[in-house]
Every structure is written in structure tokens, then in C-alpha cells.
Amino acid sequence: MDPDAALACRRALGRWYSVHGRHALPWRQTRDPYAVLVSEVMLQQTGVGRVLGAFERWLARWPSAAALAEASAADVIRAWAGMGYNRRALQLHAAARAIVARGSVPGTVEGLRSLPGVGPYTAAAVASFARGAHVAVVDTNVGRVLARAVLGLPVAAGATTVASAAEAFLPARDVRHHNLALMDLGALVCRARAPSCASCPIGPWCAWQAAGAPPAPVRTRTTPAFATTARFARGQLVAALRRAGPLSEGALGEALPEAHRPRLEAYLAALAGDGLAVRCDAGWALPGEPAPQGKRSMASPKL
DNA sequence: AAATCGGGGTT
DNA sequence: AACCCAGATTT
Image (tube, rainbow, N blue to C red; front, side, top):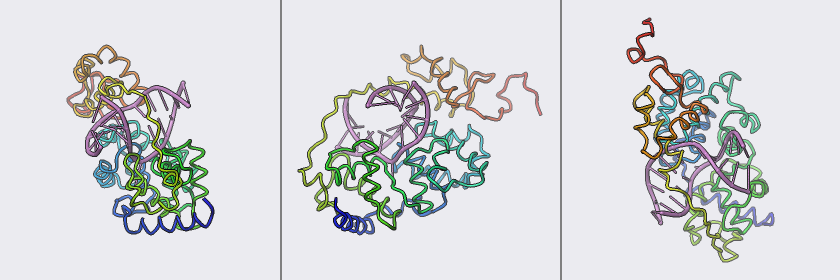
């Protein structure tokens, strides 16, 4: 896209965002880098609708990195219920402790990348949304929008290609709004399935529309039924520990469908390796749990 | 580049 | 039943 067209395209996008953007999302109404970090980690592969409630509850309970750093891992895992990808909860917890250790949330992309669970997207998002840094934020939505509008492809290209397209499309100022506008355009108009090209504000500049909006090649990858996957079993085990505290291996096996039970030991070993479960007197428990009085073996002394 | 890591809503 | 979702990390 030549510079004049890109300028006009960005202006049309900006006007659209002013009217149709999701300005009311709670994480867009704060510049607190900790709050923005919490929202971005939650939004890693969890839909906006489900993050809304969890985000508000999380900040009410742990309003600062210092507060989160003092929480137990077990409480953090329990508060993560319903969000999926439980390792993210532990990574966010560890990030809070790293932030306390270094004194503040890092202000640069490189500094943010050093936090556990913070990759290219999250680092750019926190830098741009909380600090106003002049960096391109590229999530799946933005990748798809740029692949279509700039590259003329039906789906996102390789990360490197999209990243350079995003850099080239960055405006000189108001980068935060620009990044948010691209994300919202991808989420609301330039959707993966059934895009609303007829109402797209940047349709006149879109290389994909100009090419006749060719469909993406059909993928043949067949995914196994979710209930048969290790991820499903792991989720069930963590859910059981969340719900009922320390459990024997027998009790944990009953939390799984019959077909998974022969692999119970392997699942628990993997969860222990991830820090999501620990051995205890009664069998297994969430990590970092203060010993609950009365549920412990008789050998544990009273204080 | 591909696999792993949850779970719920949408089509 | 397949697909989608504000990704990160490991192999």
C-alpha cells in the first residue's frame, strides 16, 4: 500500500473505531500496567466474554502486583477456574513476584518479555496500551486484517511477514488507538468466518477484496474428540483439586472417565512438573496450600 | 514448523 | 462435529 493510501486507510479506520470500537471494555479504561497485564494474560486464548467477569473479580481481590505476589499459588489457581490453560495462572503469579522483586512493571517490550508467560503479543500490548509505546500489537485479529488488507491473503501469513506489515502500517502518533482499532476491526468486521466486507471501513483499500475475497484453503486436520485428550483429563484433575482440596489418587481417578484412568500417574507427574499439583500426606493437592487444619494426618502437630 | 496446554460458545 | 478464540513455550 503506498503511503498516501495507507494514510487515508488509517484515517477511515480511526473514524470507524471512534464510533464502533469497544471502548467500554474495563481493561481499556485503565492505564495501570499491572491491570493491563492481567487482562492480556487472561485474554490469551480465552474469549472476551468470559474474561469480563474474571478480570473484575481478580482486580477486586488482588488490586496490585504486590497483593498478587503475596497470594498462595492454590488461591491463584482456584481464582483462575473457568479460564482454561491453568499454567497461565501460575505464570501471572510468578510475573507478579518478579515485578515486586524488580520494583515495577517493566516499561519496555524487552523488559516485559522477560516476565514469565509474556510473549511477543502481550509485551507489545502492555507497552502500547499502558505506556503508549510506539510499537505494533499483533494478535490473531490484527494478523488476519493485515494479511487481507495489505497482503491480499485470506488468512494470516507467517509471523515475520505480518510483523513487518504491521510496523510499516503504524502511524506516527496515536498508536494505542491504531492498535485497538485494528483489533476491533478484526473482531467485529474482518472476522475469520463470515467477514462483513460490505460494511468494512477500509474496504476501498483492501487487497483481499480487490482480489475477489478468495476463500482460505480447507484444512484437513482432524482433531480428536476433546474428552479423549490429555488436556481434558488434566483439566478435570485440576478442577477436582480446586473443588475438594487434597485428594487420594483413588479419588482423583474417579474424577476421570474410565478410559483415562490407566494414565492417571502420567497426568499427575506432568501436572507436578508444571507446578499445578503437589504430593501431600493425603495424596495430591494444589501447590502452595497452607496445611488445612483437621484435614491433615494425625502426625501433623497443632500450632 | 509442530505439539502442547482448557474450556465454552458459535455455526 | 467442527471451528473459533487479545498466545506462550517447548521440542
